[in-house]
Length: 325
Image (cartoon, rainbow, N blue to C red; front, side, top):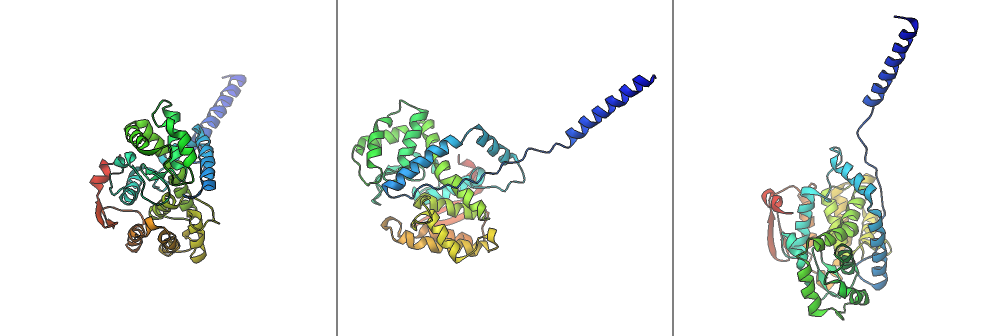
């Protein structure tokens, strides 16, 4: 072999070897962590409702292809701890909350629910009890309009804007209730409800719980508080953030070196007077169920579960969860 050919051969080996080394050093794609401070509104007041609407607009814009790609990578990563945002834990959490909001564990039947429960928030409707008085019911209809522009609920958007921040039914009434029932049969309406649930309540609950080092049980406690009280701010004592701020003054989170059971009990203790201040929530069944789970050490929401909510007995098994959507 000539000297020139030997040099060319050596160069080829070096180049090929370097490419192989570079390929073998490639790792799996890593999750891009984001920590969005979900600060919107609590579930009362006109100004807070406007803040909630602005938050929804920003959240809708932020859920781009890049965000969805990061979520897909995280779900595929076996080292990522499970959360209540998807899968079995989502089903369990939704069933627990539905037993309080809709008196059933079959939460898929609650998309059509609507009534005025007399809590000063107008109509309460849908899978988690969106209300016309706090703006999230308006957000659902607006989202539905984007998915199905010619739907029958679109005509009620002006009325929903007017009653936002009040308990009024003006411009709504029985015809709106009928239209809601009809729309709930549309998969796009279900999609609209699920989108607002995730943006306003589920994602913030998981985000704050992960920041505080909490388990799926802690995520469920945060989610339930967000559903009932709204995100709010630290200055608003009757909101989720206000309750969390009060709890942090009483006990450190696991992320701060504290014990999870101690912190979660402090969170419930801070939430209790807020619940008692509202006639519609003076039955503390929700908190009693959550305390039972803490006392049992069921931080992973393991099945089977048995609980009593507002006088009714419920249970949940692995077979039942498997049948939930």
